[in-house]
Image (tube, rainbow, N blue to C red; front, side, top):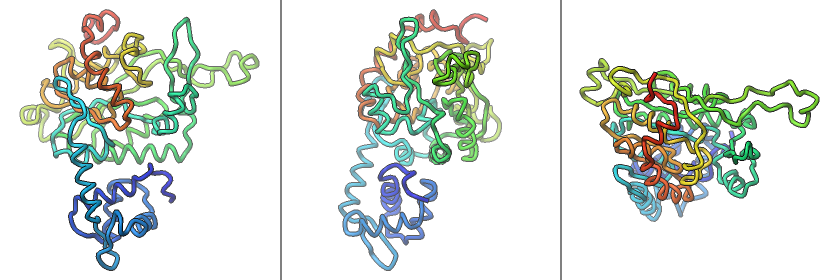
Length: 388
Protein backbone atom coordinates (compact mmCIF):
# COMPACT_ATOMS: atom_id res chain seq x y z
CA UNK A 1 0.00 0.00 0.00
CA UNK A 2 1.35 3.44 -0.90
CA UNK A 3 2.34 5.92 1.75
CA UNK A 4 0.39 8.62 -0.11
CA UNK A 5 -2.54 7.96 2.21
CA UNK A 6 -0.60 9.40 5.14
CA UNK A 7 -0.04 13.08 5.66
CA UNK A 8 3.43 14.36 4.68
CA UNK A 9 6.00 13.41 7.31
CA UNK A 10 3.62 11.19 9.30
CA UNK A 11 5.76 8.06 9.00
CA UNK A 12 8.92 9.98 9.83
CA UNK A 13 7.30 11.65 12.85
CA UNK A 14 6.01 8.31 14.14
CA UNK A 15 9.49 6.75 13.91
CA UNK A 16 11.00 9.74 15.71
CA UNK A 17 8.33 9.53 18.41
CA UNK A 18 8.91 5.80 18.99
CA UNK A 19 12.71 6.02 19.10
CA UNK A 20 12.59 9.17 21.23
CA UNK A 21 10.36 7.54 23.84
CA UNK A 22 12.31 4.26 23.71
CA UNK A 23 15.63 5.98 24.34
CA UNK A 24 17.64 3.11 22.79
CA UNK A 25 18.18 1.62 19.34
CA UNK A 26 15.53 -0.65 17.84
CA UNK A 27 15.44 -3.14 15.00
CA UNK A 28 13.55 -2.43 11.80
CA UNK A 29 11.01 -5.08 12.80
CA UNK A 30 10.47 -3.48 16.23
CA UNK A 31 9.94 -0.11 14.59
CA UNK A 32 7.43 -1.59 12.14
CA UNK A 33 5.44 -3.19 14.98
CA UNK A 34 5.42 0.08 16.93
CA UNK A 35 4.23 2.07 13.92
CA UNK A 36 1.33 -0.31 13.43
CA UNK A 37 0.03 0.93 16.80
CA UNK A 38 0.49 4.58 15.84
CA UNK A 39 -0.74 4.74 12.24
CA UNK A 40 -2.44 2.22 10.01
CA UNK A 41 -1.35 0.64 6.74
CA UNK A 42 2.36 1.48 6.79
CA UNK A 43 4.21 -0.63 4.24
CA UNK A 44 7.42 -2.21 5.64
CA UNK A 45 9.24 -0.89 2.58
CA UNK A 46 8.25 2.67 3.57
CA UNK A 47 9.74 2.25 7.04
CA UNK A 48 12.99 0.83 5.66
CA UNK A 49 13.19 3.59 3.05
CA UNK A 50 12.75 6.34 5.66
CA UNK A 51 15.44 4.83 7.86
CA UNK A 52 17.95 4.35 5.05
CA UNK A 53 17.38 7.69 3.33
CA UNK A 54 17.66 9.64 6.60
CA UNK A 55 20.59 7.76 8.13
CA UNK A 56 23.31 10.17 9.14
CA UNK A 57 20.86 13.03 9.60
CA UNK A 58 17.66 12.12 11.47
CA UNK A 59 18.55 8.48 12.23
CA UNK A 60 21.77 6.67 13.05
CA UNK A 61 22.47 3.06 12.04
CA UNK A 62 24.07 1.46 15.11
CA UNK A 63 24.23 -2.16 13.98
CA UNK A 64 22.90 -4.58 11.46
CA UNK A 65 19.24 -3.65 10.96
CA UNK A 66 19.20 -1.45 14.11
CA UNK A 67 18.59 2.28 14.26
CA UNK A 68 18.51 5.07 16.83
CA UNK A 69 17.86 8.79 16.72
CA UNK A 70 20.85 10.86 15.70
CA UNK A 71 21.93 13.16 18.54
CA UNK A 72 20.87 16.32 16.71
CA UNK A 73 17.47 14.76 15.95
CA UNK A 74 17.13 13.75 19.58
CA UNK A 75 17.63 17.37 20.64
CA UNK A 76 15.09 18.52 18.06
CA UNK A 77 12.60 15.92 19.31
CA UNK A 78 13.01 17.11 22.90
CA UNK A 79 12.53 20.72 21.82
CA UNK A 80 9.35 19.83 19.91
CA UNK A 81 7.93 17.91 22.88
CA UNK A 82 8.72 20.86 25.13
CA UNK A 83 7.09 23.30 22.69
CA UNK A 84 3.88 21.28 22.44
CA UNK A 85 3.67 20.88 26.22
CA UNK A 86 3.19 24.63 26.73
CA UNK A 87 -0.09 26.40 25.89
CA UNK A 88 0.08 29.14 23.29
CA UNK A 89 -2.89 30.90 24.88
CA UNK A 90 -4.58 30.86 28.29
CA UNK A 91 -7.85 32.52 29.22
CA UNK A 92 -9.41 31.85 32.61
CA UNK A 93 -9.54 28.06 32.95
CA UNK A 94 -9.04 27.47 29.21
CA UNK A 95 -5.69 26.42 27.70
CA UNK A 96 -5.03 26.28 23.97
CA UNK A 97 -2.14 24.24 22.53
CA UNK A 98 -0.70 24.23 19.03
CA UNK A 99 0.18 20.91 17.41
CA UNK A 100 -1.04 17.68 15.87
CA UNK A 101 -3.77 16.30 18.12
CA UNK A 102 -2.63 12.66 18.05
CA UNK A 103 0.94 13.61 18.88
CA UNK A 104 -0.39 15.86 21.67
CA UNK A 105 -2.53 13.05 23.11
CA UNK A 106 0.46 10.71 23.23
CA UNK A 107 2.23 13.16 25.52
CA UNK A 108 -0.59 13.53 28.05
CA UNK A 109 -0.64 11.73 31.42
CA UNK A 110 -2.83 8.65 31.73
CA UNK A 111 -6.30 9.21 33.23
CA UNK A 112 -6.03 13.00 33.22
CA UNK A 113 -9.05 14.07 31.10
CA UNK A 114 -12.67 13.82 32.26
CA UNK A 115 -14.67 14.54 29.11
CA UNK A 116 -14.38 15.36 25.41
CA UNK A 117 -16.59 17.55 23.23
CA UNK A 118 -15.30 18.04 19.71
CA UNK A 119 -16.26 18.81 16.12
CA UNK A 120 -13.50 17.04 14.17
CA UNK A 121 -12.60 17.25 10.49
CA UNK A 122 -14.73 14.21 9.82
CA UNK A 123 -14.10 14.38 6.10
CA UNK A 124 -10.35 14.93 6.68
CA UNK A 125 -9.93 16.11 3.10
CA UNK A 126 -11.71 19.42 3.68
CA UNK A 127 -9.14 20.53 6.27
CA UNK A 128 -6.09 19.67 4.21
CA UNK A 129 -3.78 22.61 3.49
CA UNK A 130 -4.76 22.58 -0.19
CA UNK A 131 -8.52 22.70 0.41
CA UNK A 132 -8.24 25.29 3.18
CA UNK A 133 -6.33 27.57 0.83
CA UNK A 134 -9.08 27.18 -1.78
CA UNK A 135 -11.72 27.98 0.84
CA UNK A 136 -9.90 31.10 2.02
CA UNK A 137 -9.65 32.30 -1.57
CA UNK A 138 -13.36 31.69 -2.12
CA UNK A 139 -12.69 29.05 -4.78
CA UNK A 140 -14.60 26.29 -3.00
CA UNK A 141 -12.87 23.07 -4.02
CA UNK A 142 -14.29 20.33 -1.79
CA UNK A 143 -16.16 23.11 0.04
CA UNK A 144 -19.56 24.07 -1.33
CA UNK A 145 -20.03 27.84 -1.08
CA UNK A 146 -23.81 28.35 -1.15
CA UNK A 147 -25.29 31.46 -2.74
CA UNK A 148 -26.91 34.13 -0.60
CA UNK A 149 -30.41 33.15 0.50
CA UNK A 150 -33.13 35.57 1.63
CA UNK A 151 -30.52 38.28 1.94
CA UNK A 152 -28.23 36.18 4.17
CA UNK A 153 -24.80 34.85 3.23
CA UNK A 154 -24.65 31.12 4.05
CA UNK A 155 -21.59 29.45 5.50
CA UNK A 156 -19.59 27.05 3.28
CA UNK A 157 -20.31 23.32 3.58
CA UNK A 158 -17.96 20.41 2.89
CA UNK A 159 -19.07 18.09 0.07
CA UNK A 160 -18.85 14.70 1.75
CA UNK A 161 -20.43 13.07 -1.31
CA UNK A 162 -17.13 13.57 -3.18
CA UNK A 163 -15.23 11.21 -0.87
CA UNK A 164 -14.13 8.04 -2.66
CA UNK A 165 -13.53 4.58 -1.18
CA UNK A 166 -9.91 5.40 -0.33
CA UNK A 167 -10.99 8.62 1.42
CA UNK A 168 -13.54 6.67 3.46
CA UNK A 169 -10.99 4.01 4.41
CA UNK A 170 -8.58 6.73 5.48
CA UNK A 171 -11.34 8.35 7.52
CA UNK A 172 -12.01 5.13 9.44
CA UNK A 173 -8.30 4.51 10.01
CA UNK A 174 -7.78 8.05 11.27
CA UNK A 175 -10.59 7.90 13.81
CA UNK A 176 -9.51 4.49 15.05
CA UNK A 177 -5.96 5.76 15.57
CA UNK A 178 -7.32 8.87 17.27
CA UNK A 179 -9.64 6.92 19.58
CA UNK A 180 -6.94 4.41 20.57
CA UNK A 181 -4.61 7.28 21.43
CA UNK A 182 -7.33 9.11 23.36
CA UNK A 183 -8.49 6.10 25.41
CA UNK A 184 -5.62 5.87 27.95
CA UNK A 185 -5.64 9.57 28.88
CA UNK A 186 -9.33 9.51 29.85
CA UNK A 187 -10.48 8.60 33.33
CA UNK A 188 -12.88 5.65 33.59
CA UNK A 189 -16.43 6.76 32.81
CA UNK A 190 -15.38 9.78 30.76
CA UNK A 191 -17.82 10.68 27.99
CA UNK A 192 -16.76 11.58 24.47
CA UNK A 193 -19.21 13.59 22.34
CA UNK A 194 -18.24 13.84 18.68
CA UNK A 195 -19.95 15.85 15.93
CA UNK A 196 -20.54 13.89 12.76
CA UNK A 197 -22.55 13.83 9.56
CA UNK A 198 -25.39 11.48 8.55
CA UNK A 199 -23.32 10.23 5.60
CA UNK A 200 -20.24 9.39 7.68
CA UNK A 201 -21.37 8.75 11.24
CA UNK A 202 -21.40 4.96 10.81
CA UNK A 203 -17.67 4.97 9.97
CA UNK A 204 -16.78 7.23 12.88
CA UNK A 205 -18.88 5.22 15.34
CA UNK A 206 -17.36 1.89 14.32
CA UNK A 207 -13.80 3.22 14.58
CA UNK A 208 -14.37 4.55 18.09
CA UNK A 209 -16.19 1.46 19.38
CA UNK A 210 -13.52 -0.99 18.16
CA UNK A 211 -11.03 1.16 20.10
CA UNK A 212 -12.64 0.17 23.41
CA UNK A 213 -15.36 2.79 23.92
CA UNK A 214 -19.02 2.06 24.68
CA UNK A 215 -21.61 3.56 22.33
CA UNK A 216 -23.98 5.52 24.56
CA UNK A 217 -26.40 6.98 22.05
CA UNK A 218 -26.61 9.95 19.76
CA UNK A 219 -27.59 13.58 20.31
CA UNK A 220 -29.74 15.02 17.55
CA UNK A 221 -29.10 18.68 16.89
CA UNK A 222 -32.24 19.87 15.13
CA UNK A 223 -31.07 22.48 12.67
CA UNK A 224 -31.97 23.37 9.10
CA UNK A 225 -28.94 23.73 6.84
CA UNK A 226 -28.37 24.31 3.12
CA UNK A 227 -27.07 20.74 2.60
CA UNK A 228 -29.12 18.54 0.28
CA UNK A 229 -32.56 19.10 -1.18
CA UNK A 230 -31.23 20.04 -4.62
CA UNK A 231 -32.65 18.93 -7.92
CA UNK A 232 -30.38 17.05 -10.36
CA UNK A 233 -27.52 19.30 -11.45
CA UNK A 234 -28.02 20.82 -14.91
CA UNK A 235 -31.43 19.14 -15.14
CA UNK A 236 -33.50 21.26 -12.74
CA UNK A 237 -36.34 21.87 -15.17
CA UNK A 238 -36.46 18.33 -16.55
CA UNK A 239 -36.71 16.79 -13.07
CA UNK A 240 -38.34 19.62 -11.16
CA UNK A 241 -40.09 17.25 -8.73
CA UNK A 242 -36.95 15.29 -7.79
CA UNK A 243 -34.63 15.82 -4.81
CA UNK A 244 -31.24 14.11 -5.18
CA UNK A 245 -30.82 13.57 -1.44
CA UNK A 246 -32.82 14.60 1.65
CA UNK A 247 -32.52 18.18 2.79
CA UNK A 248 -30.51 18.20 6.01
CA UNK A 249 -32.64 19.12 9.02
CA UNK A 250 -30.53 17.57 11.78
CA UNK A 251 -26.94 16.87 12.77
CA UNK A 252 -25.74 13.79 14.70
CA UNK A 253 -23.42 14.16 17.70
CA UNK A 254 -22.21 10.68 18.66
CA UNK A 255 -21.91 9.79 22.34
CA UNK A 256 -19.36 7.31 23.74
CA UNK A 257 -18.05 6.42 27.19
CA UNK A 258 -14.89 4.83 28.47
CA UNK A 259 -16.06 1.83 30.56
CA UNK A 260 -16.65 2.59 34.22
CA UNK A 261 -14.95 0.93 37.17
CA UNK A 262 -17.63 -1.07 38.96
CA UNK A 263 -21.02 0.61 39.27
CA UNK A 264 -21.77 4.11 37.99
CA UNK A 265 -22.12 5.41 41.56
CA UNK A 266 -18.71 3.95 42.44
CA UNK A 267 -17.18 5.62 39.41
CA UNK A 268 -18.83 8.95 40.23
CA UNK A 269 -17.42 8.88 43.74
CA UNK A 270 -13.88 8.01 42.60
CA UNK A 271 -13.50 9.69 39.19
CA UNK A 272 -16.41 12.21 39.14
CA UNK A 273 -17.54 10.69 35.82
CA UNK A 274 -19.82 8.00 34.45
CA UNK A 275 -23.00 9.92 33.70
CA UNK A 276 -24.22 13.18 32.18
CA UNK A 277 -25.19 16.31 34.11
CA UNK A 278 -28.91 17.00 34.22
CA UNK A 279 -30.24 20.44 33.22
CA UNK A 280 -32.11 20.37 36.54
CA UNK A 281 -32.96 17.85 39.24
CA UNK A 282 -36.40 17.42 37.68
CA UNK A 283 -35.29 16.84 34.09
CA UNK A 284 -32.72 14.47 32.55
CA UNK A 285 -30.35 15.47 29.80
CA UNK A 286 -32.11 14.59 26.54
CA UNK A 287 -30.88 13.44 23.14
CA UNK A 288 -32.69 16.07 21.02
CA UNK A 289 -31.62 19.70 21.16
CA UNK A 290 -33.32 22.38 19.08
CA UNK A 291 -30.77 24.67 17.52
CA UNK A 292 -30.21 27.10 14.67
CA UNK A 293 -27.41 27.89 12.24
CA UNK A 294 -24.71 29.90 13.97
CA UNK A 295 -25.77 33.52 13.97
CA UNK A 296 -24.00 36.43 12.33
CA UNK A 297 -22.99 37.86 15.70
CA UNK A 298 -20.92 34.79 16.58
CA UNK A 299 -19.56 34.32 13.07
CA UNK A 300 -18.25 37.87 13.11
CA UNK A 301 -16.31 36.98 16.26
CA UNK A 302 -15.07 33.61 14.99
CA UNK A 303 -15.34 33.21 11.18
CA UNK A 304 -14.58 29.49 11.15
CA UNK A 305 -16.38 27.38 8.49
CA UNK A 306 -17.61 24.80 11.04
CA UNK A 307 -18.50 27.15 13.91
CA UNK A 308 -21.33 25.85 16.12
CA UNK A 309 -23.53 28.17 18.21
CA UNK A 310 -22.57 28.77 21.82
CA UNK A 311 -26.14 28.10 22.93
CA UNK A 312 -25.80 24.53 21.70
CA UNK A 313 -22.19 23.90 22.70
CA UNK A 314 -22.73 25.10 26.26
CA UNK A 315 -25.40 22.45 26.78
CA UNK A 316 -23.10 19.66 25.59
CA UNK A 317 -20.10 20.90 27.55
CA UNK A 318 -22.12 21.34 30.73
CA UNK A 319 -23.52 17.81 30.42
CA UNK A 320 -20.19 16.06 29.82
CA UNK A 321 -18.98 16.60 33.42
CA UNK A 322 -21.76 15.08 35.56
CA UNK A 323 -20.59 16.69 38.81
CA UNK A 324 -19.16 19.82 37.19
CA UNK A 325 -15.61 18.73 38.08
CA UNK A 326 -12.66 17.85 35.88
CA UNK A 327 -11.19 18.89 32.53
CA UNK A 328 -12.94 19.03 29.16
CA UNK A 329 -10.79 18.44 26.08
CA UNK A 330 -11.36 19.51 22.47
CA UNK A 331 -8.67 17.83 20.35
CA UNK A 332 -9.81 19.73 17.22
CA UNK A 333 -10.19 23.18 18.69
CA UNK A 334 -10.60 25.28 15.54
CA UNK A 335 -11.62 28.76 16.63
CA UNK A 336 -11.85 27.69 20.28
CA UNK A 337 -15.64 27.66 20.54
CA UNK A 338 -15.73 24.57 22.80
CA UNK A 339 -13.18 26.16 25.13
CA UNK A 340 -15.27 29.32 25.19
CA UNK A 341 -18.36 27.28 26.09
CA UNK A 342 -16.46 25.53 28.91
CA UNK A 343 -15.21 28.86 30.22
CA UNK A 344 -18.75 30.22 30.23
CA UNK A 345 -20.10 27.33 32.32
CA UNK A 346 -17.11 27.44 34.67
CA UNK A 347 -15.21 24.32 33.57
CA UNK A 348 -11.48 23.86 33.05
CA UNK A 349 -10.69 23.02 29.44
CA UNK A 350 -7.87 22.20 27.03
CA UNK A 351 -7.87 22.50 23.25
CA UNK A 352 -5.44 21.49 20.50
CA UNK A 353 -5.26 23.05 17.02
CA UNK A 354 -2.62 22.60 14.32
CA UNK A 355 -3.59 25.39 11.88
CA UNK A 356 -1.72 28.61 12.80
CA UNK A 357 -4.45 30.76 11.27
CA UNK A 358 -7.11 29.15 13.46
CA UNK A 359 -4.82 29.49 16.50
CA UNK A 360 -4.63 33.21 15.79
CA UNK A 361 -8.41 33.34 15.40
CA UNK A 362 -9.02 31.40 18.63
CA UNK A 363 -6.88 33.76 20.69
CA UNK A 364 -9.25 36.58 19.75
CA UNK A 365 -12.47 34.58 19.74
CA UNK A 366 -12.36 32.60 23.00
CA UNK A 367 -12.74 35.60 25.37
CA UNK A 368 -15.50 37.16 23.27
CA UNK A 369 -17.51 33.97 22.77
CA UNK A 370 -17.18 33.06 26.45
CA UNK A 371 -18.64 36.42 27.47
CA UNK A 372 -21.82 36.17 25.37
CA UNK A 373 -24.76 36.38 27.77
CA UNK A 374 -26.73 33.26 28.70
CA UNK A 375 -29.93 35.28 28.46
CA UNK A 376 -29.12 35.81 24.78
CA UNK A 377 -28.78 32.04 24.35
CA UNK A 378 -32.08 31.21 26.00
CA UNK A 379 -33.97 33.89 24.13
CA UNK A 380 -32.72 32.81 20.72
CA UNK A 381 -32.54 29.04 21.11
CA UNK A 382 -35.36 26.69 22.20
CA UNK A 383 -33.34 24.28 24.29
CA UNK A 384 -33.48 21.74 27.05
CA UNK A 385 -33.14 24.62 29.51
CA UNK A 386 -36.42 26.08 28.31
CA UNK A 387 -39.78 25.12 29.80
CA UNK A 388 -41.38 21.95 28.44
